[in-house]
Amino acid sequence: MLLNSKLTFLLASTLVLVLFPQYSYAHGMSEAEKQLIIEGGNLRYMWIGATHMLSGYDHLLFVFGIIFFLTRFRDIVKYITAFTLGHSVTLIFATFNAIQINYFLIDAVIALSVCYIAFVNLDGFKKYLDMNPPNMLMMIGSLGLIHGLGLSTRLQQLPLSEDQLLMNIISFNVGIEIGQISALALMLILISVFRKSHLFPAFSLIANYALILAGGYLFLMQMHGYAHTSHPEEFVVSAELSQQEEGKQQLGLTGGPEASVQSGWKDSINITIPARGDKEYKLYLVKGAMLEYTWNTAGAALFFDFHGEPAGDTSGFFKSFKKSTDSQSSGSLVTSFDGTHGWYWKNNTSSPVTITLKTKGEYQRLDLKKSLDQADPVQKSNITTHDTID
Image (cartoon, rainbow, N blue to C red):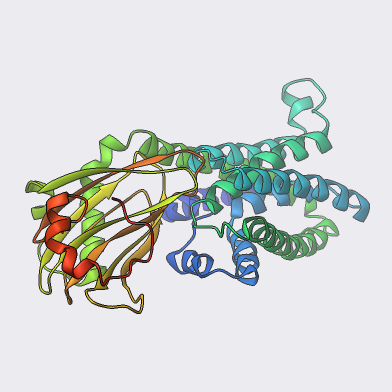
């Protein structure tokens, strides 16, 4: 009976993971969440941190494994504190110093940490390796450091305030802890209900084997994602198509994405954004002009704002067409006013990032002397929002 229940649960778990593979990528932040961070506010950072932890089920699975056989409140506090200190240290330190590691690789290690904690709960070291497990408190603290790197790497995908960087990070971390405590309370209630039942031995076996299954599956999915990011040249065509289709939908522009991929570009410009720095690149277009573009980095994600500034405006007004954080973007635009149109990039990493920008259409390049001379009567009255590339 016990064996049949275990097999049924494992098969059901496998079916859920296979049917819904998108949920195996942990920590994903929606565009709405990114926009909340961009707009600032420490309370919003706290809110994002809390919701991020509650949706970061690889962290929650690890916490579930930690408390599974803990019965005393003092022990729960001790081990959860070790995990909290571990991920808090690396979250704050790595983000403040712009230390980034490929998040798929980090999440793959986090997935293995879920397998590890379940293996310990099943007494696997003694049963299968004939040895005592490493010190549990030390291992949880160490694995917490890795979890913190995952949180930090994801957080650094967003533009952080230079003036209040530390407070932003701390607020995000406070939110993480609020989310963790909320989830922990529900887990303790669930486990305490089963602990009083004669079914608890069966429940513990099924739950921990399921943790190993889930951790192993997450590991494979994250390594699959890592293959995409470490060998991007294998996915260039599909990426360009999807990015251009996204740009077309968001900007409401004409022309199929296939034409942009197959046809030649008028200009190809390399732009280097310094570490922790920002730059703007502008083109001058008249009303009704067409611009097609694509840009990408070698993999580093940058905050960007694709926007335009009307000619002759002295108020500092500018209109944003597309704003996000990514390593590439493509699209096209039919201008609704005379003026400068271009990109603002913000590099939150600790290393310079080079952008390859390709454009075509009816425009004047303001970084060329000839174009500057032609556009000068208009440009003198125009106010830029950021430092423009000369």
